[in-house]
Image (cartoon, rainbow, N blue to C red; front, side, top):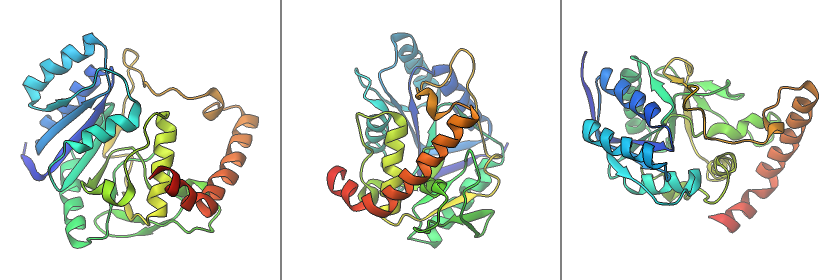
Length: 264
């Protein structure tokens, strides 16, 4: 296995009560020969059982553990983890993802994209659906376009918490993550900020091939959503999509300045 060490990248992993998932992620990174300038695991107040395993894993995988005594939510967890990064680039991955063997090559291509374009803010590797407005770019990536007057509300997800590489100066342009909110709302406000501040992102065309999202029965997702947000009932799905179509486009068109003034 060829080793790939990225001295200008820190791997940032957010974690909460899923230490076996974290071990699986780090083991896969090592198996694929991926090395970084450093690894930071930002823990959000896991139980004693999981925290003890984190300390054991830190000795094996040589990562820096950034913990807290009180669960502060996703925004707080990402913020304190990002604050500890010292390299030019941050590879952000949540603990329940597994990279494929092809990822090392794509990651090297990503650094080349950043070096060639100083305006590029985000290189994304995973998505749950195809972004509605894309333009073919290079090295297997497509640019994500955000036409303000286009109707498909999914355009708001040019930014995503799914695995991505970003400049470690990300906060300087887009602000810190909102704290004290649910994970979904935290991500939503960063999506708004990304659009407001004219974020530039690309998505790997094979966005289902580089990472696998795994939730095992013993370590299911800790994200809790109201049932109406994900229920597959046709009537609820129609109402949900209609609401998002109106609300998201309204926020993009009319609330970007207000949200910025209030929260950033």
